[in-house]
Length: 81
Figure 1 (cartoon, rainbow, N blue to C red):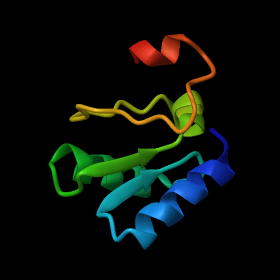
Figure 2: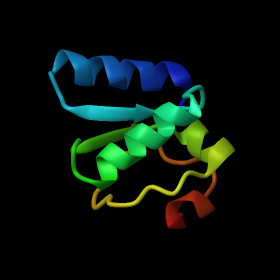
Figure 3: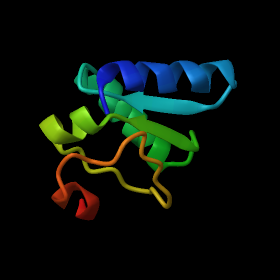
């Protein structure tokens, strides 16, 4: 997905009052670390994670049991990661 799609999803989660952390390609290292930690330790149930962040950084996201894609990954090998 694109950054505007990510922003739209983030806005929808905020409007819904969802408790979540967000990681995108423009996130500072400290934001990424804090968001991943909150998600892994169960302090937030949702991690909004952009495909572009994965494409450029390949962050390892631990603790995920379910995934929701805004759009399918552009590269097939991302499914296994």
